[in-house]
Length: 234
Ligand code: SAH
Image (cartoon, rainbow, N blue to C red; front, side, top):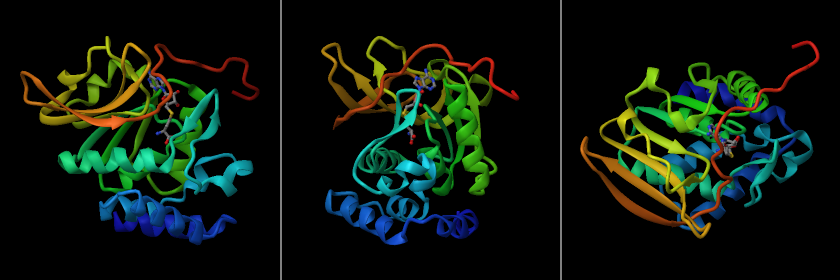
């Protein structure tokens, strides 16, 4: 992890955004109850402003979600911190499948926390942008691919953890068969009334033990993929 974070540093300093705004974000996360020092250290060092459009970079450290195009958003820092802290509290996964790469910000944090990351995104433009960012920031081992994450990534299974960054309808059968025994699945679950709850499941090979981690708000998981046609030069 240290090597990756070392590589990140000079790139982050290239931006116009002061590391002080990032430090303020960390302070606010602490005040809101995030105590996991590993999560806070990773978030202090991964430059969130490089995961949004330049026009929004100055707002990157505010406690809000921001648009990343295609009607999608980069989750707010507190939500990402809660997801990561819950994941690390359950166990410290080595290999993780992320569904809904989006900007790649959470992907970068998972990698900065020392995990081997496979990530799936259904919108081709977002896949390309996230791959380019992650590579430029030195996360060369992260695998991001276009696909419908609802199917998981069988060829790369089993995972120690699966983390959904989009709200999963109650009816969708979770991907427990792609988890190793003792693995965890973390997902925002959309209940029939539209309310969302963050759920953590621990898989024992036969059954999943569920823990409810409270309210949350994510964009919905959608089926299929979106591929941009007639791209100039593509
Ligand atoms: N954690 C991300 C948040 C991305 S928002 C970040 O830090 O930027 C959720 C993402 O899930 C969107 O990019 C959306 O396109 C993607 N998504 C929705 N349904 C999906 C599916 N079935 N498979 C893969 N990605 C999906």
